Length: 274
Image (cartoon, rainbow, N blue to C red; front, side):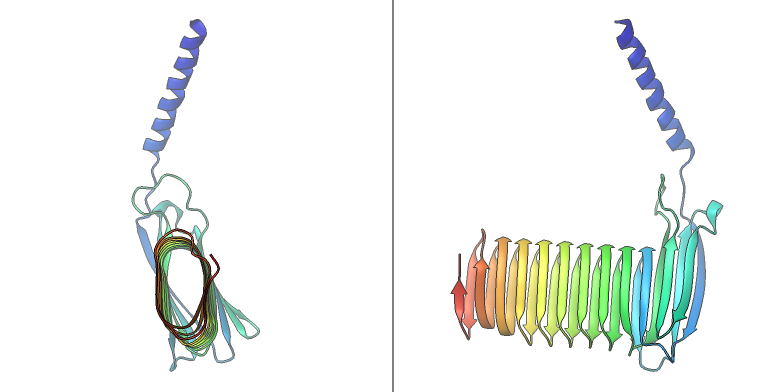
């Protein structure tokens, strides 16, 4: 009985001590500064972007000859230099970094983050490595590569091949004139107006695909799938969820899993293996 009392007393003391520490030292990312960077891009063909937490917007402009960055930095006012923000070049590539050094701890409201807007010549290729936060990329002539931890991804008006690897969050892609490859852990996927082949590898979430001038290869774990107006062959490997296919050049279903299947207007071959 004495042992039980001692252990209980120690446990209560530890819990009380923990509560006091957390309550007495919350942090607030309520300090805001804005920074602007620019870099001559007349000799550059590509930009590598590395960002931590916060939103990222990248817009191509045919009239620009430089990269223009606006960064809104939110942090605890006690640590106003606890971030990295840089824009440099090496050879024919530019390199941009926007990261907070630490976001751990107990935060009241938002944790530290950097919201970034980049305007650049539309002829450049873009490679993005992002931690968390929404991403928007528009009006790019070159290739686009996105690796994102979490957050929504919006891509529009890209002339080069586009590759998206996203952990979680909604993905919305339209008006791509090259091939499109999407890997997504979870979240809704909407793809429309692609002048090339598409490939989707999805864990979970609904998928809607339409107006593809090429073939479509879709590997879907779970969630409803709708595929319409595809000029080429559509290949589907599906775990669970309903499948709707309409007006496609050909159809091959490797696995339909569980869920309803509705198929209309298949112009070429139609094959179901399961």
